[in-house]
Amino acid sequence: MTSIGGKDLGEVQSESQVKSTGLFNMPLPLSDSDEALLMDIFGTTRTITVSGVKTGAVAALRTFVTDIEEIMDGDQASSDFVSSWTNVTKKVLIQDFTHDKIAGEETSISYTITLIEGEVI
Image (cartoon, rainbow, N blue to C red):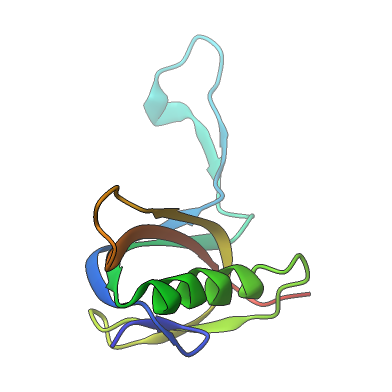
């Protein structure tokens, strides 16, 4: 089961992770790329994007949306993200949450959640 903050994310249709370094990159004038100055001094970040479908009664779907939005309260604490794909738990904050209700479909919503791994300061 994939979850964030203990909230079941339903049927996950995709999970992507990007781990990125904050490289300092300084190309030199009149030089090709093999002579650029690179320094790995800014550390790394990981962004996790999860897209899925949550099904249930209308009240349960509204509760799901409210629960995720309550985690994003403007003073977030780290939440545990449990991935059923990697089977790893990561400490994350929610950056974005998008949910879509399709007309005529009363028992499901689609969603996308963007997470940033790290510790709250």
